[in-house]
Length: 565
RNA sequence: UGGGGCGUCGCCAAGCGGUAAGGCAGCGGCCUUUGGAGCCGUUAUUCGAAGGUUCGAAUCCUUCCGCCCCAGCCA
Picture 1 (cartoon, rainbow, N blue to C red):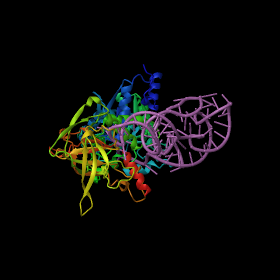
Picture 2 (picture 1 turned 90 degrees about the vertical axis):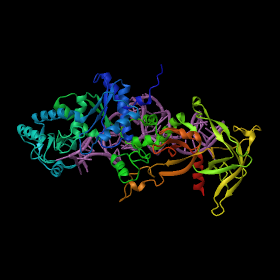
Picture 3 (picture 1 turned 60 degrees about the vertical axis):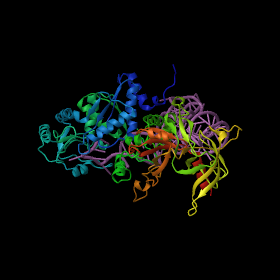
């Protein structure tokens, strides 16, 4: 028995739940994840999912998935299916506990009548503009609606006729009768129902009055028997309202606990902004691999494990925070390093001719599939006279910190031979190096010199005759600055879009075994990063996404060299 | 400005009156057939500030400062 307490077990929410269990306030744990089906889930939602599902699991309870579909104008079944898939992908299961706020419409209606009968709700004829004007401001109290004191009978009659469709859209609302002078604006007679002649994606046209989120949410939690309603800080100020409803109604009272939302550097995480990126064409869609949406991250090659580990490392608190994306990237690499098969791929090919290698000879060298996992085995990779190496791995006049290939220098080709660069052939018109003539040392087969000679660098390579071609999409952060929302007057976040967030490379050369890759398969291309096969791939036309690069110390050195000069 | 919330290392975050965990990032080194991975070391005499209580405070009290959220018939 270990006494190691999981890091995720010590946050204030879990602590509060333990206390509730110990004090007898609750005897079980039931949570819920309540998304609105009006868009795609992103990593911010993943935090709420991880908290609600994760905690229920830890405490031996369950977490339901309840779609908060109270606004038919914005919602669609397309989104409910997509969100379900995302949650499953993240690794969570709601079992038989799939609910919809719309399942409760009838019960909510009855509860509303109950409130009317108690004299705690009334039908108001104020227009939207008037409602706003009557609400007052942050510092001034609101004024009572002239309709506030209608009799219970009149309210009941009007409310029933609202439901029956006798009044035009927007003409009346049902409001809770609380306190127009409350310093908490949420308590200034909030609207419970509005008239909307809109077809609902589940209830069709059976309703023309729809409950607001504020009215529906707490009662749904109560009806379902939720013990702990875990939501973000935005709802903290609404809690007194939810308490008021529950108490006036005298029904079961769950406990709501709020936590701080997740924010990431170099990222924007609000539905509104993500939608703009899609609609204005800055990205190819919700599943663009640069998007922080779960569909986007999945396509990019993220693993659910990496995301969960990330969330666990970030932790839960009430402070508003902006987490450094490098933590996410770290978790991703950590996970991929352990599981991704290694392959060799040359992204920007430079031809190498081994002058002393026998014409027509093809050898097979044995390569390790994953040094982190011996059970992944080995594979054979063809080697021959003409090869491709990475352009970046050769420099004609290298600085002293560069220890890859250069004229007269010897390096190792991974799993193959030592080669020495004899000369570089240039395009006479551009001066660009177009191929390298090298010699190999037959005695170094496998990569070690019998005379104990060392080389500084090991390069990846692909045999030209055996290479398969592919398109590779290199992704970088979508935004160029840590906080894209921090913009000068007159600009918006799109001003900070990183113009280099996508590079498409064609004619990349891959080792032949990659021809068998299946969509979504993940690999580490040695010395480059992690890549996965994109669904855009067709027979004979492979497309790989770079999920994440490997940490690149040479790039750092180059940066410093650049900064110094 | 009324109400609510938050302020511990560059970024997260433990800490719950007994003398500042950990992770990421950074830096230095070791190791290495991935300049990857791994390993080691290193960074808060100080907890937004000032007072006070106490033998003793990041933890309790007071005041002040800063940041975030709330004025949708959105959720």
